Amino acid sequence: MSELSRWEDLFREGNLKELSLGAMKVTREHFGNSVFLRGLLEYSNYCSCNCFYCGIRRDNGRVERYRLDDDMIYAAVDSGFIRGLRTFVLQGGEDPEFGTDRMCRVVREIKRRTGDAAAVTLSCGILSRESYAALKDAGADRYLLRFETADTELHSYLRDGVSLERRLKALEDLRSLGFQTGSGFMVGLPGEDDELILRNIRLARKLELDMIGIGPFIPHPATPLRDAPQVPLEKTLLATALLRLFCPRAHIPATTAAGSLEPDGREKMLSCGANVLMPNISPVEVKPHYLLYPGKICLDEDGLHCIGCLGGRVAAVGRKLSFDRADGLICKRRDRVEAGT
Ligand code: SAM
Ligand code: SF4
Ligand code: FES
Image (cartoon, rainbow, N blue to C red; front, side):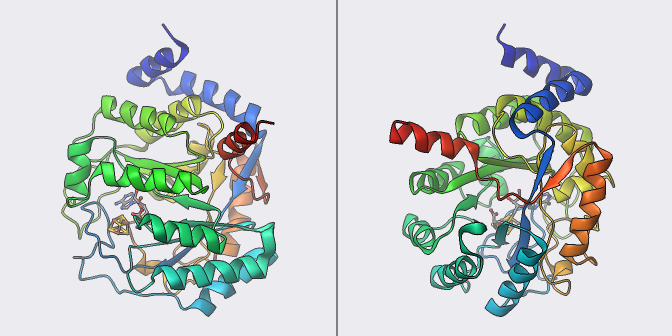
């Protein structure tokens, strides 16, 4: 039996102790004790998509919609940069008003203000290859686009007709354009069983991702999935540990959704192999309107306050915060292979 199928069996048995021990060994080998920070900026909650799981989906008429203006974005980046952040993640709905030209302008300006000292990560959904190419030209370094679930039927159903194939094509476009590429999935979507979680993890490994974001699915009351059961965090923890064993070099965040489901959910993910935290540096006045799921944490706190809070939380689990921009290890290796060095 291969090493990986042995780990898969431990996942099926729910043996979190063994899995997390193995996962932490691998995490320390590649990242030491460091937990890398990424400043998250939620620039727009307008979305033309209607994903069944998402609180800011198009048909949720109860959302107060906002779009940050450029100066608000730069002010958040400037204060994060002064505080030491060296990665800025711009995330939003698929908002046609926040088009490619505007995003290119914002990326260029962030790069100008911070130099190559800071990496810019985008998470703006599915765009054309031409748009991705323009964003790369403007200086964007990384892109996050979760595949959400590896099951084709469940994917089309939950994403209101948008296929998994289309999502994977976008990921291929991003990779071939030279982005450090991130993807991932939610744990506990309705209709999912352990075998599907294993397929998600195998797909993440196959995609050779630089970053892999996973987190618990939390049903939102104003979505079609409002009555779905809440799967306990334990399942996400098992998946995190197995993911670390399958993808040793990937950056894996301890996600806000885990911290929203349980007060120490992020610390628990860190103890299962996660090595990244993403403080939310969006202006406090818009934070309550980017409610993907109920119970989201840190809505009243300034992102810089969160950095202090996170320092204490990682110390409590024997790790330390790192302000390094921490580029992807997979793409670095790919670059070396292509350069023949
Ligand atoms: N619009 C872009 C996209 O869909 O890729 C980026 C923003 S989207 C809100 C970011 C992620 O939030 C999604 O990839 C999804 O996994 C997660 N998400 C959405 N609704 C959620 C929920 N109810 N519970 C947990 N995570 C959720
Ligand atoms: Fe829009 Fe992303 Fe939410 Fe889907 S998950 S509705 S694409 S913001
Ligand atoms: Fe935001 Fe603790 S991380 S208040």
